[in-house]
Length: 243
Image 1: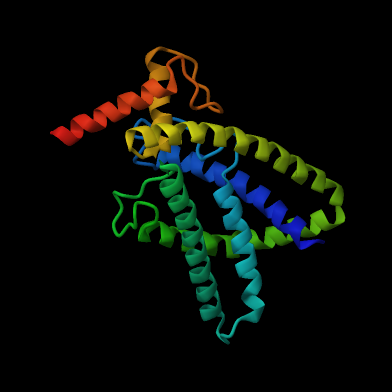
Image 2 (image 1 turned 90 degrees about the horizontal axis):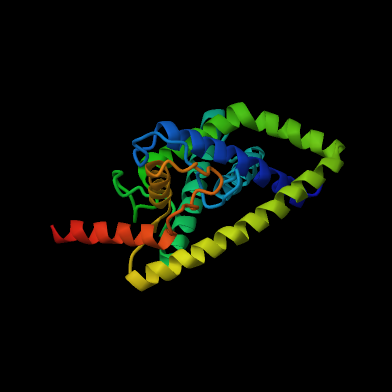
């Protein structure tokens, strides 16, 4: 089976699984969501987080290197895999976070309240979490991934749905990019950094305040303009700075 199809399938699978993980985490564990509301996570509108798609493909490739290990001990081989996976995931997270922060003036996630954080993009706590996730993947998920890839190799017709996923995903990404362009113009105009998840919560709070129907898959739609909500946030920030 072509390696490109394998990686495409893993990206699709990881993006959807990552969306589910983020959805649960932000609903029950995130300090940024104290009211514990269901908030559509991630950059896109649909049920996928591409960062996790890249992460799953990276974990698959790293674990596949096990047979080339220079260690005779199984323990040290696995420890090296988990450490490499954690570093790879942290690097992916840092590059994605840095690019959106420096180029788009957009903060997709915020670790500034975490110990040892770097620019609020990465921190030791979540690097350890990545290592644990790689371990979970190695022991509990990778065997099923291999089974799924074997199934895909004998059912290549299913690759149509992989292609369909990418078609819808690209349309979604283009739509989201248009919104990001508007947010960047606002951020440049007022010299601020827009906090993506915080903005979602603000829009949701406005929807609740006017008893409007919440739009899970359109988290930025509101009877009130997005610009006015952003201006309100900037005004509150200025008031805090003056105190």
